[in-house]
Length: 377
Image (cartoon, rainbow, N blue to C red; front, side):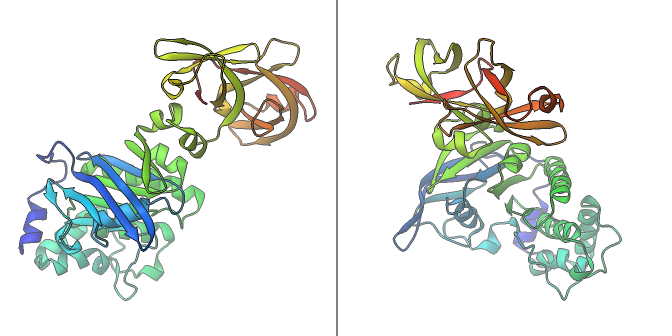
């Protein structure tokens, strides 16, 4: 067995790396393509065993950051460290990373066992050890009995499992996933997300996942790095990203949101109170630290934090029902409202009785759940 293979064998899944500061670390990494800056001084540390998602729109730099971790690209400045070792000039095949591509990149002329064993073979792992590890990882991804099938004989979900098995069989230090669910239909995608997360937790493998799908990021991740224009705009847990966005971009990009015109009513310690109509909504003070009391602000409120009431009742604002969209477990109600920055509000409520109680064209009041939301000047 060669040095690389031996190193993989000595790092059993579930072990904790000695470098507590981060299994993967990017220090002030910049990458340019001609005159375009794809990454602008990005710094982030990913913990051992963590599932970290890079989330953002196309062109934000998330795939570039993943490719730098893989060694497909080199940084123009800054440092990349894996398990405490500088990787800037280390070629891909020496980094002990497992990579799962968007299109799976399976070899069409090889069967499932051959595809999965390929990384072990090029590392000089013995035939007996290859067979043992291939058998174990195929059992892990629930493909026992599929060893002799070719990729064209597999469904999309099965091909994805083969690609995942191939990435895991080498016992990678880091698992890199580049939008692996994009080619799957909705139901299969949800199923594979659950399976991937279960496997990742079982193996405790450090994972970097790239996606532009907000629901994937929120449901899968330990932490999420929201990226835009080559920078990380916010790094936090899914709950922090969703409930406490740091700026307008994050508040607008992650999940659905409503924007209501209001004013800064008062400040109390770490909280601020926003006046919207007769409503008083408590929000974090930090985004408003330089804003004067009585100044105009915009309140970002999630659809589930707005409540429909009778128009005659005291409320934050009012509007006219424009549409109901039945979603099975909940109803999305769109309301024309002049106090909204977008002239329309989205209210998400459970149960179908909303449609019966307030038909299209009804005038309704809208209340806001206090303690939920964030405001920006």
